[in-house]
Image (cartoon, helix red, strand yellow):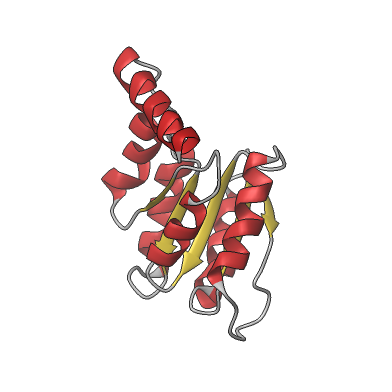
Length: 148
């Protein structure tokens, strides 16, 4: 799978570890920044991550910031993105299975490297369950997005 990853300065220390882990799982990883620990605005990174997902350069995205919350808010402003903050194993896979999430956001100040690896592995291994109920709900999410 093609994965795009990005972070702000708060997520910078954890991003490289996650990117290396994802590559070790056999995925192709594109890092859209930040490339230094200097302050950066997370909406700019969200724009880059989400553009890769919506443009087809990546199958899924990962964002790492302090809590994951700002990254998720920014990502969800972009048409075609369904982003979720995931700090537990169940949410990391169920977000994909039930809600077809295509960007997972992780808080580097909330989870450590070992848990981040478990979360990312669960997220990347999960597949959307195309049951009638889940498809209908994801379609309704798209309708909300179109209606603004």
